[in-house]
Amino acid sequence: MTNKKIWLGMLVMVLIFGMTVVGCDDDTTTRTIDSRLIGKWEFNKILVNETQYDLPYGEMNSAGYEFSSSVFTSYMNGSVAYSYQGVYTENNTFYAQNGQAGFTYSISGSKLTANFAGSFGVIANKVSKFSWE
Image (cartoon, one colour):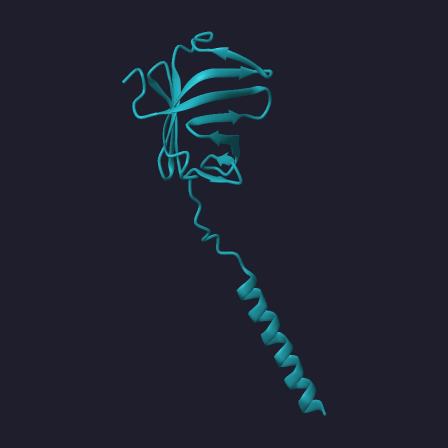
């Protein structure tokens, strides 16, 4: 009887160890950009507190986004404002390289609406070439 308890205890330990190893997440999830976003998007409206304003707005004469498979670049007045590598999208939310949500978005044809936390957003049209290029 003691021999059976030892083997049962060993079986339980092997099962627990096996479940622990299998259950560990090695973070090999492939994260990608929504293929509909890939390309150039030029702003045509700025959203502030749910009110739409045409460009130019304030000091912003022209602006846009460019998405590739893992790089996001933001432009303002014809110059790079910032660029991030390792970006991804999930459930219509854009995430920066550090995993923080950048904005939620919706796409209808060639129109992108991006909403940031708070009261700011943009409406952009997909273009083959920015107007300032």
